[in-house]
Amino acid sequence: MSSYFDEHNCDPLPDTGEASSRPVDLLEFARFLILTGNWQHNEFASMFADRPPPPTSKSYIESLERECVDEGCKLLDSECPICLKKYELQDQYLQLKCGHSFHATCLVPWLEKTCSCPLCRASLPSADPDWEELQRQKKREKEREADLEALHNSMFG
Image (cartoon, rainbow, N blue to C red):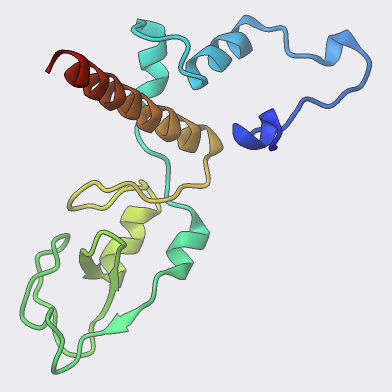
């Protein structure tokens, strides 16, 4: 059986024996409530939930394979959605997990500013643990709503 901390992807506070080392600040408590999804429908919570996405993680950017446009490439004579220039032979491009392709020189600056696809806004990995936790909470909330809807439909449908 996994521990609470493994299940929720967080680290326990160090046990120093001093009560003063524990976070007692109200902002830390509010952050805890927001990140765990227990502070719903509140203007204060929306300040954190609606923040812009952080940069894409450097390891993800480095893991993208740079490919070159060649004679048989499907991108030949199509346009890069960012710069709107046509792909030409020997142009380097990157393809994201959502399937969209971009010039490497166009995509990397975008990913260094935000962790989403420029075309479809599909979420990409970031190095910000708070952002990743917020994304997990949003996903859990959608799953809960879908489960409640399915339960309602099975009872009254």
